[in-house]
Image (cartoon, rainbow, N blue to C red; front, side, top):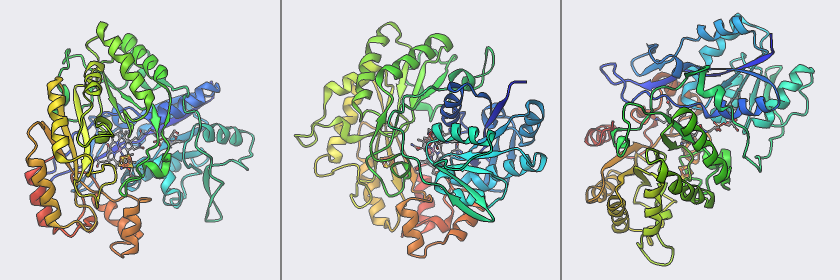
Length: 487
Ligand code: B12
Ligand code: SF4
């Protein structure tokens, strides 16, 4: 039998309301981590196998407690697969800090119990930020910290030759102590091979991700073939210059935006459209439209869509407002650019403002771009046939009720806005907000971990202990009632 490693994208967790019903839509999302890690291994001729527990087992839903629903195949399915295919190592992605204790730890425990010798390697955003939390379980051999493409190849080769010394970017436990090796510099050239076929097809001819995963109803705008929707995530750049206090992206991927190039982007889009019929491409990078290669891509798409008007682009991750304004003049919208986005196939334009209070937001210079200008921007999106969405946040650390009401009033005055999505600020390890919470004694690591273990931490459910604002909990609940998460 060909030697293979098995990559598992764990189950997902979702918040429940007091009636035990999910408060966020369950979504099928392509595992970008597996796409890239397995691509890097396939390129070196290393055999791979892949399971996505939530995408392959949506009907398996288990209520873990009154706050958390687990969605995905049971962990025994992984144990079963290992017994059938005998992989040489198990690779697991740990992206969300909130999912370690309830989702990742039980999976690893189940596998370790059945296979005490199988090397277990975990990577991902959470693993990068908190390798010690994972390693303390005693069930993981290695954590890959940071980008995994190079590290995983070296680690697997090292395991084969019994020499894992001098591998940069890993953490492991020796005599109960966590050892982190020298960190690996970020890749300069991120234009790498992706394991497209392996990830998208479960078996030959059978797609793994069948449901189109939209954010909410607005995303159906302009979609032609509503019955036959297939989606893919665009993730062709890494890094973000903004380093916002609530976010880990600039910390993990750096402030410089590295891009795979517009040619590569288009080649993938064309291939996926022609061979699989994928017609909705939703961006998941954080700076879409900022890098010149994105603009080149939109120009190529504009041409391609003349023959293929069924293709839709959108960016649920939200655009920076500043992309659409001329630098030289206050509130001056760049209409040519808006036309380009419309021609490239965007159906919904989601703009990230988060707050109109500069105390909480770094990404907009409010002297240059005012609410008036943003309203004009939305009107112009409408003029070009696109829907509009505003991404706002509330409950920032130390935010007062008056500050929130001020934001709410500004938003209420927008005339050309279709959807506002209000998101309560979440605090994650590694962020300046988390550090502030520790420094101010609002929580400590133990109490933080206890509360997310018990209640999780979701857009629609922030445990009371992690409300770092000065707004009392009942006011936040009332605010959320006025602005429910848009389905
Ligand atoms: C796409 C995305 C999503 C998607 C899909 C995620 C998925 N595949 O399941 C959606 C929209 C569903 C989503 C949802 C949420 N998200 Co999100 N999301 C992202 C985003 C934008 C990109 C993640 C990604 O796929 N990157 C691409 C991959 C390739 O990069 P990567 O994960 O870093 O992988 C590299 C390395 O980590 C490593 N690696 C990764 N896995 C493995 C595994 C092995 C074995 C190895 C060796 C290496 C390795 O190698 C990879 C290649 O170099 C990030 C922000 C960002 N830019 O990173 C936030 C982010 C991951 N999300 C975040 C959050 C909070 C959420 C939510 C919890 C929010 C909520 N709704 O309450 C939800 C909950 C998820 C759920 N239950 O479904 C936070 C997580 C913070 C944290 N520490 O937990 C992030 C970091 C954003 C932030 N605010 O800081 N998200
Ligand atoms: S702009 Fe977005 S991705 Fe960038 S640091 Fe801020 S929240 Fe994170």
